[in-house]
Length: 127
View 1 (spheres, rainbow, N blue to C red):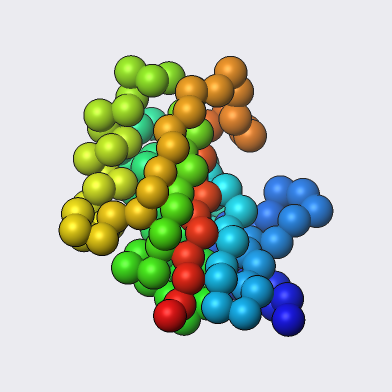
View 2 (cartoon, rainbow, N blue to C red; view 1 turned 60 degrees about the horizontal axis):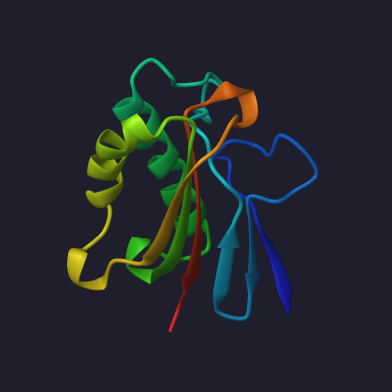
């Protein structure tokens, strides 16, 4: 059965989509950008801080679904400038245990919502 995951600890969706959808034991998150859910402000001054906010938003959605980063099996990272990859990867990597790190793709794109620099989505499974 399909269950919509919604938390006030992550930004409200910017359009007709859910923060995440849980089907049986599999969670599909929508892409998260660096919106501070408390203030509604974008965090884009420094790519490391921006990535940190994205990861915190993902953590909030995972937590609402009673999951954590250990449950993530796949991530998709969209960035506006591949030159930011190392800084993004450093922050991103701090959330995962290397021995059980998820599969991932990182893609440079022409433009992201609200002109942010990074957007990340995850697929998680609770065994």
